Image (cartoon, rainbow, N blue to C red; front, side, top):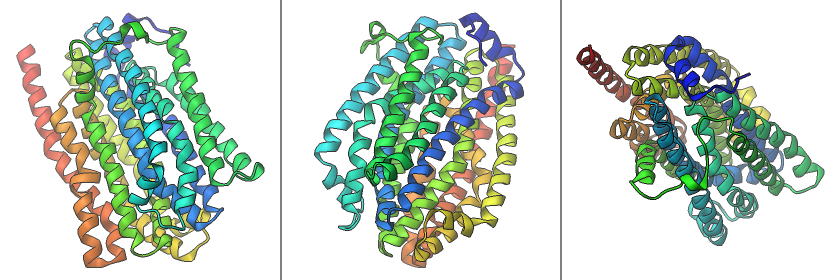
Length: 455
């Protein structure tokens, strides 16, 4: 368990501990957090899919709403986290406090706005993103409670990322794991025990998000974190919020485009019926579960990269990147191989409808086959964002579900029909990986010049 280190001790840990040990120490609790979060997302899909196919499709329809909330939270959270890690690496702790507090209270405010406008216009939005008449009632019942959880979800992303940026991923893990386990336990109780149906799944998510938020906030209130979260540190002066937002733009682009991508995917799949939407929705959740492991490794890498970049320990930035790529590839390869082989059985565990299972099995095999290369996509993006190469990070973050996916989902189904829907994400992933390579090469060549100029 992490002991409560002083700011100086934490600095020494981040810039002197061997990078492989440090990333592993930070990544393991982060991976556990991401897996538990992904598991309770899958749990929602699993339990809801046994209500009806329309209910399963509704979860996929509501997913863009989750992506919008995540986009707001990730923007402020990743922006604040990147800036905080660099400031702490430079020993500018008071500035880190201001950045963290400003991001936190801004996230709460944005979350409340989403709650208000989301509930006012839910039916219009859900119809816009592809809900059929049969699916719309289920989607509305599910989305209602997701909107109410927006403030806690947005603010939790900030608290979570600030803790990780300090190198205190263990504290983050406790909060997210507690909420995730609670969600998994409450799903069957609310859905079947209390006969709340799909609304029960959403209520379980709302309760678990609130519990995670309270635990995360408690670390700051109890002064277990390096940064001090206070309304007194909130400011709109000196462009603090603008810097946080600008640094988080890659996350905004990534998550915002994920929402658009899901809408387009639902629309394209909807041409082949609700079964195709259900099959693609389940595939997306399964792939996200595996991808969350890599995101966890990347988030273990990110504070190491930011801290050492701020401390001008460029050799350690390069070592950390290499370790992240190698470990990520090996882990992803194992998961991808297992899921590829057993794809039909994995899909059968989630849905009984044969048409939905057939669509999901093909799509799952295409998408999971490229997962071992995800470390290159995720890692290079996080490298750029953690070192404040914002334009490069933004461009790279837009590729997978934007620049490449949107044309793919618009063009490939016209050429290959349903197969085009199933292979679109694979094509986008492959192009995203190829694009990341020259950016990584250019970054480290520039870093070598910085290192020589310092000596």
